[in-house]
Length: 243
Length: 238
View: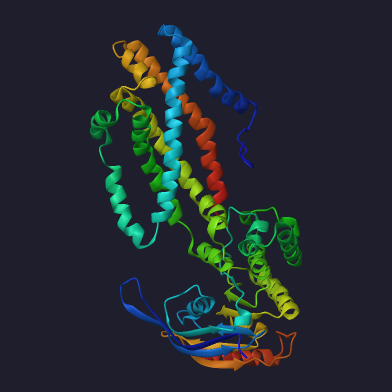
């Protein structure tokens, strides 16, 4: 059984000079339910484009994306948080629940529970501009998880954060993933993130984006980021990614 | 008062704002005396003109917002925007005598021509606000599944507000200017146009009248629009 299955996904677009660019070429793969799947690769390898195709945000492509019917409830964590600045933290997190028509009292209960999990309960009435980058991304993750999604897409969620904040958020994310077990598909160009988080890592080549190799990450969890096995896998990925 | 907005910075500020309310009224009383007009008649003229302007503004704000939401992006937008750009340059006063000939000297004609003056700045300002929507905001909303009235209330309306306010300031500036001219050309009963026409041979009353009008416009700007503008930018901008 799969959560997402891709068959021969290709995508091209016009660059600013009007030249046709092939961003993705014949990408096929399967992601299992509950898997933490990371897409890694250098800039220009079409990682984010593929994520957007899988999530339905990008609609013009060739090939087929199949999302298992039991996994149709999806959410997305954006690189630059994408919080609506005119809404409070509470209302930002509440958006998806409003869309589902969930009653107000139930919405409040779910949002406050989610905010508490991320240590944001005291900031429910704050606006995004009043928060630090790390807190904003916590709101972004809380918004993505509040409607119990089956698949969470994450587009370089730690890239705007300092390393200390990113480390804290990675830890929280892993705890939540272990507790709720959604399928997570994350794009990153940071090899350490991939090794620390992923069950499998798809390494992409640039222009056009194709799968170079899918690496199985069997390091035991919780992962020791200073172990020799961790470094060995990092080195293997660096070798695969470097031009 | 608008939530979260510190309009009053000090006691002197409160006093200044209070004066903005009181001074135009005092001036109207003084002006009635100078022009030897019954105060009630002058207040009536100001009130009638103000009502016409408010109705025209209400229609313009609604119409401008609906048009902007409908045409700010996509193929529809690229076709419609140049057309609207031509329409906003249409010399409306040239068509006024013809409209009077066909539809008579009524307030409806005045309001209609005021709408033509006010709607375009509002439309173009809201359009520019909507064009600044960040791609990831759109995508976040799309992923959340927000649609229908909730989409309008939680996404489109708030993001339109800075454009609506900027457009309202410019549009109402045009509106005040068009108001007096339209009332004079249409020759409609009541209103500031009739008043200025009546005193057109008296430069002292005309000058004082214009000063009074500017005082009212300045007070409304200072009391309503500028605080709203500051609030909206603070609220919507990241």
